[in-house]
Image 1 (cartoon, protein in one colour):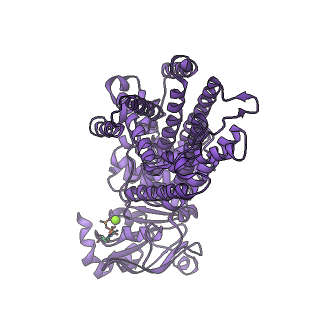
Image 2: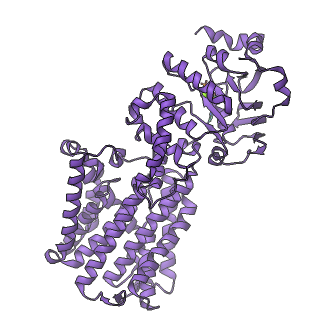
Image 3: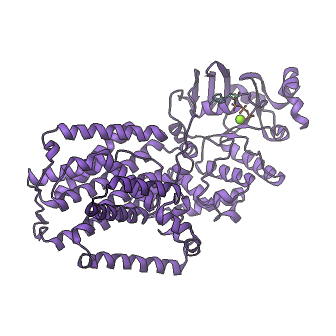
Length: 260
Length: 336
Ligand SMILES: Nc1ncnc2c1ncn2[C@@H]1O[C@H](COP(=O)(O)OP(=O)(O)OP(=O)(O)O)[C@@H](O)[C@H]1O
Ligand SMILES: [Mg+2]
């Protein structure tokens, strides 16, 4: 399932695309002239060595950072100067490389916070907390999907690193995003969780677009439809996994890591 | 992303998880005891003193709504407190509006000032936020010094208390007292409800992880601004009430010292707890009253108290109590 069918390449329109994306930090070009297209129903991997600029690309696409140059469109709409929260409301939702949960909320409340806004329960300052009880059913369903039901009432801070990553995926899915940007979602997980969450990502990608940074190349080979390789802020290669992994430049720059 | 995390709060103070039946009963009993105390207090203690405590307690609780639940340290809250005192005093004295409307005007004025100040300050982080609130409050101070309606150094004097709802004569000390007590309770209830509401939940998550809240689509600045305006409005409610109690409004209440005092009260009692700021303001007001009779310089003592507070019990009186062994045993953190 890793190679996209040939006819789909031309016809599909990208849900999220960037052209000439660049970002400079002082004198340092962290991202240089990057083009990327993310398609509905596909998983797109963004790989590259440490410090290649993958997270910076994520920050640019989600508008947590303003690009120095380039243009970003989300479902045909130019979002180059849109605020990050608005981008999220439009359906482009990201996770963070360093796990981002609300540590002193319970696992259940973490998911309910994500559900509050889409369900119109975020600005009621006059209603009691029990108003959020209507979200519990949905939250429980999500927790069941990702397999976090047992930890439901624990504080997020008390979860192991891998379980926090799982929780973050649950809160991201709670928004039912059109495009998911996952920054190393499987890092720190045990093998059991890796298999389960990779499978989950595969299944949620059927109805949306996924762009993920991933160091685990066997997972990339397994579940990703497209691969873009980044090195020193520039695109080194792009295409399906088989093509990219045969690219001699990629092999010297990156694939040597496959063994570790 | 140079984000400074300003969370300074013991977050377990907000924890609403699995409260046992016994705890709920204990909580109810404590609440009833508090209400009874408020009811009989004017027969035991000099009412004007308690009214002063209640006004400052509401002020501190409003301030705590901001620092304790959003992590924003405002150095300009005197503008809302003192500003509202002027608005209420002026409207009651010059326009002859009834006291309830006067207090409402003060509250609305505080909210309006909060909206303006918040508009400029809310996107700043950490110390920059504090500096902007301080400088805007100082600008307001100079406005009050220059403006005609405030009567400069003299302030607005002999403000009539009037008749509440047209029939309760507030010149009766006991009527004034119960009015202040009711306003205090309403104010504290509003804060409690605000903190424990869906909106409060978003505030809490913003304080916990602002980046994540943004990535979930929350426009963080708007939620912070909402909390800021609410805090300013309730500080205004306290200031307007104080103007009626003492029948004057002067520059003291808009000065930076008042902004500092409310920080002291909140720190002393315990940031992020419901009871802390109330207790803290009682201690500070009591200290001030006592020292005023001895002629000892008040600022030295309050300065020393502040130092001790920061050095020895950083969580404040109530915060330390909740974190102590007894406090943890009874789960005090959840309901103080
Ligand atoms: N805010 C910033 N200011 C200055 N330099 C930055 C900033 N953010 C990232 N960089 C630099 O940009 C480069 C790319 O960083 P980035 O985090 O995007 O890499 P990455 O591909 O995600 O790496 P990793 O695999 O380690 O996560 C690095 O050299 C980093 O030091
Ligand atoms: Mg990275």
